[in-house]
Amino acid sequence: IDVPVSVRVPDGRNVLVLEPHFDDAVIGCGGTIRKHILAGNKLSVVCVTDGRNGIPGLKDKQKVTETRKEETRRAMRILGVEDIYYLDEIDMAKGIKETSVARLSQIIAQTKSDLVYLPWFLDNHVDHVKTNELFRRASKALDLKLNVCAYEVWTPIVPNIVVDIGEIIE
Image 1 (tube, rainbow, N blue to C red):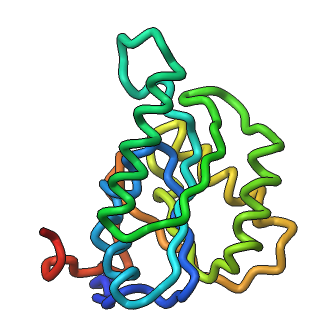
Image 2 (image 1 turned 30 degrees about the horizontal axis):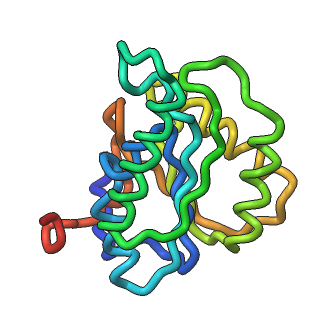
């Protein structure tokens, strides 16, 4: 097994983070997001699903979605992220809306992304797999020169790079 390389942050000035659920980016790469912000990088986050099934037992799905979006806005403000986009795919739903593919393609082009973070492509959650497929389809028609980094949320990964967040974890 190769030893992962330690980097301050991966190369990229215009960073795009795709999160299937409203808490995935903070859980999976929140410290790295903060380090990118402190390094002066432009950072945008795309929330893929609408969160309606994120609080089991609550019947008012619109209220759940609104609550989860507000929690995400607050969490991202703490990290220093200002640009948040919502695709509003339905949690755990099969298929991907073509409007989401087109919108993500537009966001990638608009933000001039040169580094994209998303859950590891073998992550064992349907919405995480869907996020990878969404990115593949949205980026297919674009002439991209970017790096892609996976982050861990649900299923452990064997990394090839690591970012030490010890200095900013608080």
